[in-house]
Image (spheres, rainbow, N blue to C red):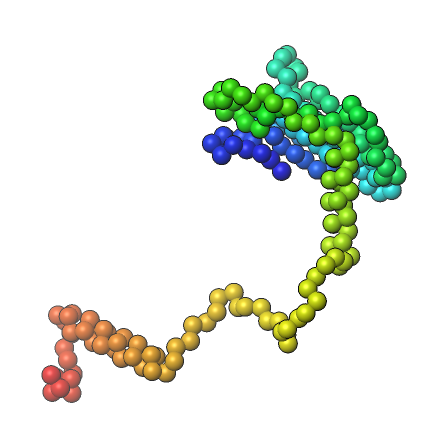
Length: 202
């Protein structure tokens, strides 16, 4: 997911969710985002959820740091769910963003009041992740609320390009119009000579 001002070339904030990538791959991806945008991407957030027997989840955040060999250095790492899936309570652990992060530097220059902070606690991250996983499980297992009444007898998908059918009267009119147009085109052609039967009719 990304958050981007519609006039900006790049988003200000990018959010990546990973179940399989290793942390070093996420770090490399964050660096590519930041360097590729010349640091117009201000924050890359990664939520890393382990799998294959572990429910550990962590969030990492990268910001561009302008300096020699020091762009895109990881700034924050917060573990908010342990190996068995329990919340790791830590009042100090939170994802902290600034309002100005959601726009590029050029966008931020247009406004002076973008210094407010946004705090997302570890508890909130934990709750959002639990809800998302529960929703995915329900969908995979075919559970959840669905309509109980099915008034149709059977379902039939629409043709991708339905054929157009004309009623017999309209089809006859179109055929007659086509014949008249073809005859007129031939008569307008100077090299055309009418047959004896056509000449008699005229």
